[in-house]
Length: 369
Image (cartoon, rainbow, N blue to C red; front, side, top):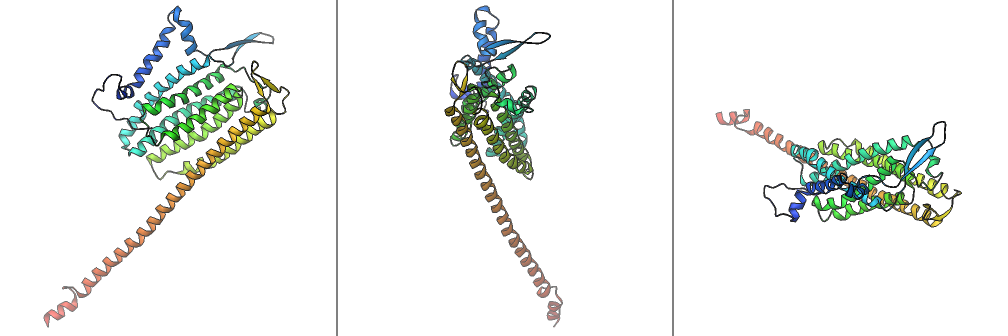
């Protein structure tokens, strides 16, 4: 993310600089239009599509007391809801940037490189922490951790509780908001390809799990991944405050490798074995059933390629760190002998003055003679 320079000059209205400086206010006004639409009967039906979760299905449970439980499935109207919460994500991004990160930056006086990385880690740490906590609460409430068989049992999982569907809507909205943020934050041209790659990976995998009704597996993998990424960005924030504190990176490196192995294991177990042996085989778009060998192979290939790509980036990152550390140690070793040699020469010079200088016994004797 780039550095936004605040100036006292008022840029022309609707110019690039005007939009960048006031994008949070502009987006807030757009979001308020949808909220105000709820107040009028004519526009309320249209505004509800953007603000509330769609495709509600009420199911009555059998028991002593019959209760109604609301579930939701996905559909084309979710695009409108995702768009609205993308606007909310842009507003929240600006609030965190202005009222938290910018204040810390002014106190720390980071360099341009650290300033950009600090903003990135600060934003992502807040998002990962919120998503990890929210996702964990859903996993516990749905008993997905205590019953791993439920990841594939009863597929297709077309019906979701409100919290799970809203979680996926917010995830898609957040990663979609990262695209216009590249413009709003004046991201450097050399950083844009890297940003686009990981934003696209998030969108493809989250949308794929949501559309293919693999929401339970997707939720578990997201929570696992977010925890590891949260540890990395928190460690980087700590490193910026004190460069000697690097223990967090070591813990993250171990968990990163374990996370990749666990992701592959859960994916193969759910898609490769669980769905492959399920009774409900076949392709039925209306029923939301995508349990055919082509889809299973495509899903597993996408997950395996992504994990391989992440491991490749991780290995390159570690090798670069080790090279930098080795170069720093080599420079220290070269500086130590140079300093010791200069001290030795200085000591020899002092001894020479004492042995042959004007105040030495030998000099006084030669002077008297």
